[in-house]
Length: 363
Image (cartoon, rainbow, N blue to C red; front, side, top):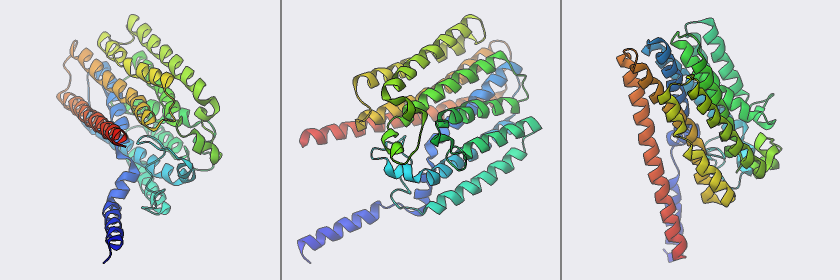
């Protein structure tokens, strides 16, 4: 065998070894790491309910969490199928934008993604039917409808500059509302304030997430709100929006709408969006390394805010009444899982940057 043949065989072997199996490709297609978002908002909605009523039902919490996971995964598989052309046109995807790349790389047939989305849809509907009240079941149906038509025809909300609002409505308004209602707590101004804050933060986050995708989206006629605004106006909207949000938190804190611990914990997340703004001002997001970091930290504002609410509302409740032991366990588990994942992800990101830097210096 010639040297060239051996090298060719070696490369073929390496490529085959790197090609993931069906199960691994399915997991990658589902983008499971994003379930941290739905987990944190279910926890935050439940925390507001526990603080208001002093009660906690582990059964209804788990049911809503299962519904949120199924609906979230359904959205991912649905989006991968209906967003395939836009993902193919995306020349600079990151770990957080541009899809999973499983269908783009041909690791699975597109029909597999759509079929999985339907299975998850029916599963989520089955769980939603088990919710205790008609109002909660209607909220669940609304969650699934908006999620499905985020990219699916005929509405294709994210192709008509409505995707950012749709995403915020589902994940950071309806899902935490459902978690709250499942605990049979009365609606309070604290809940409405929390929902308003995270709803706005999610729209701002989606602007940043859609920013690197704009060139590819335009190639396939996909119109997002980010595409309409353009990079300069996105930066101004993102910066101005966070000024409004954190001002609202300060006002709510001053008027006792938010407990002091909760308001303080939310204000402690401010350095993250400030860093995102400063990074965008000094370097274009067309730089791949910057895009990776900016989209990551823009995404982290939301689970960090939800964790701040879990901590703040739980500690605030404990000052005035006994907090149910199951809730302490759920809150602690949510915080530990997110913190562990965040630390591992940041460490891995820093290592990749370090390797990239060394390789660049060697070249």
